[in-house]
Amino acid sequence: MKEYLEIFLTFLKIGVSTFGGGYAMIPVVERELINKRGWTTMDEVMEYYTIAQITPGIIMVNLSTFVGYKQKGILGGIIATFGVFLPGASLIIAAALFISNFADIPEVQYAFAGIRIAVGALILDTVIKLVKGIFKDIKAFMIFLIVFGVSVLPAGILPPFLKSPVLLVLVSGLAGLFIYRQKRGPEVQP
Image (cartoon, rainbow, N blue to C red; front, side):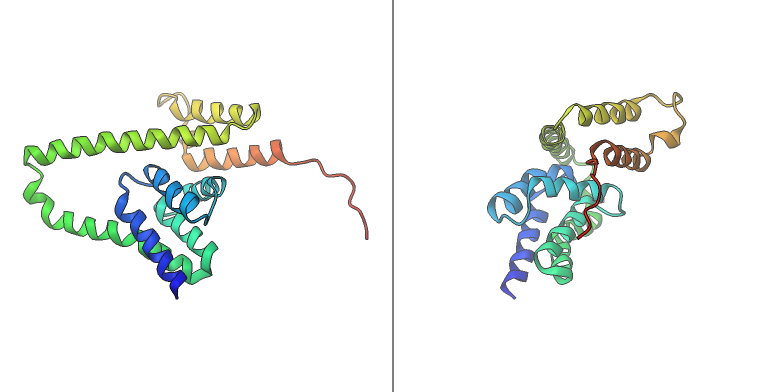
């Protein structure tokens, strides 16, 4: 029971202490899940983020489910997901109830402007960490350049479906499969 409580409180802390979405949470995930508890590695986090990109739902909710499941099975996944979801859901409900009363106050608008800047800095930090972790060789760099190039092309140059994130992730996965697959020798019969 103690392990489940630790999972819940850890993900509750992550949910309370981070803003800006899944990528802005990576520094907190790194501190809490990798460095402090050793529940996962940065490579696994990047794999979870990759899977979360092609599955429905919020990235951090998916990540918490994966890590919780890795620690304590299905119940661990449910508890971790609830822990990370609870603070954001509570804040959204509170904001929905009261934001219309405060949204026009200049000080509130200034605070939101500052929060957006901080979130941008956290996301930039995450992008730098992601880039450092993926460029293991020239092949990875080439896949990155092609996907980045396709994704930033102005509208009208390519049909919209070719710029779909789902298609780009799937094509990159297939490229990785063919590029990085080790050539196997003849199967050895026992």
